[in-house]
Image: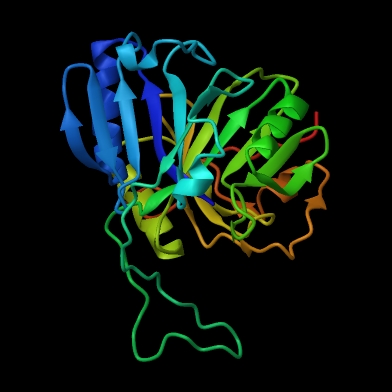
Length: 307
């Protein structure tokens, strides 16, 4: 079974400034720096999933072409739980966007963590203890990757051949895929827009609960990083989110409380609209010091808005 994402690799834009800014960004994001050299940085989440930053001409990128100009995502390594199943998969290939896709026996660590339970009506899970307040986030794992695509049909077919399953979709616009029949709502989302070609949209990092989404987002705000959108909630996957601009390409997301699906799930189809993308969302984020929304103008568009 494909368990999830073991590692992702970005290439920077080659400038010393981007290298330094990107290093600080991922430290502030809550990752641990485990390897550092003049041409490679390796960070880890709590469960050992890795984020690798490479100089654009690093030998490890040989044989690949960047999906887009500048800093961007170059590789995704998917972890597999069974050695026999691994033999049925290509060790390495390029997807239709030129993104390198690899498979390996998962190197992630089992960890004992639990988010704060919710006291919903008729189901009290938290007794004699308050919910936590997080001063910052420490991401548990890499939750999912979202790619802009200019070849949606071919891209979906490529990942389905590897065993991915469609969870939900915007017909002719976007497809949510999970890497195993039973698991989170999506590990990969492919989004085709008339105004974009191929490239990275965002990478999501899973945290414990909605309180850590808030704590992490506020900490990033205090550190001076720019919110793209959030906090908010996706009605399709039920997940809470907070998106920031990422110096190595696209956006980056804190994510929690995603739906869990099984083989019994029936994929749904939705018409793209702002209300499908977000049940609620805060434009411009929340200021980490005042804990209030900065002045923001009404309007704007969402990535799935019909054009």
